[in-house]
Amino acid sequence: MKCKTSDSIMDYAYLGARNPKAPLAFDDPDHKVLKTVNNSFNCITCHDPHSAEPRIVFDHLIEAMSHPNYKDYNYQKNVGKTGYPKIEVINMGVRGYPRKIAILEKANSNYMCGQCHEGHNRSETFYRDSDGQLAHPKDAIDRTGWSVGTFFAANPIERWNLVRGLGLNNGTDKATGVKTVSTDHYHMEIVVASKHGQAGVGCTDCHFAKKANGTLEHQPSLPSLKYKNTCARSDCHGNPNGDNWSEGQAAYMVATIQ
Image (cartoon, rainbow, N blue to C red; front, side):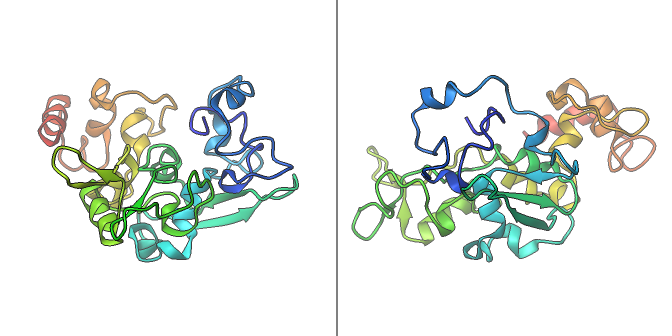
C-alpha cells in the first residue's frame, strides 16, 4: 500500500520497522492499513510539500541509493553523472520515530517513478546455497545492507548473477532443480542503465507528452497513444532536430525494440 497511497506516509518508521510510537509497520495486516486510506498517491510522493523539490520518500530506494553496501552497484558507482542525480538524505524524526526523505539534486522521473516501479527485494525470501537455510530471520522486516531495496542491476539477468554470486536464491524450480531468483517489475533499473537513461531521459518524457511550448503534461498514459508528442517531439528523434521521425517511424522503432 506504500506504493498506492500517500495517506500513511507519516505513519511508518524508517524501513517499516516496528516502533511503539509509529501507527503502522511493514508487516501489519492489509486490512489495518486499508482502514487508514482514503486517497491514492499524490504530489507529495515525488515533491517536497514545503520546497517543491523533487524527492524520494520510499525507504528502500533511499537505502539502495545511499547504503555503503551498495557502493559497487550501478547507481552509486555513477552518481553525479547524467541520469544519476545526487541525493541529500534528510532525517525526519519529529514524530518520535525515525523517518527519512531524499532530495534529488536534479529532477529525474526515473527515480521518482522508480520508488514503486523497481525490482523490490525487500520482502523476498532468500535461502543460502550452502545449507538451504534462510539467509535472514524469518519474517524479517528490517533487513540491512544489500537485501533492502534494489541492486540497480542493468537487467534481470545481471540481477540473477548478482544474487547467485552471493550464494543465495529464492527457491528451487521443481521441474528442473534450478535455483531461482525473483525479478519483480524491474522497470527503473532497465531504464536507468539504458542509453535513454544515461542521456537523461526519464519516464515522464514518454509517459507524459511534451506540449508544443516544450512543457510536459502531467497525466501519465501509454506512449503508443501519443508518438507525435513524445518520440516525434523529442530533442533526439523529433522534428526539426535529430532523426526527424514521423509518428509512424516512432511506432515502428518501438515495436521493433519490443
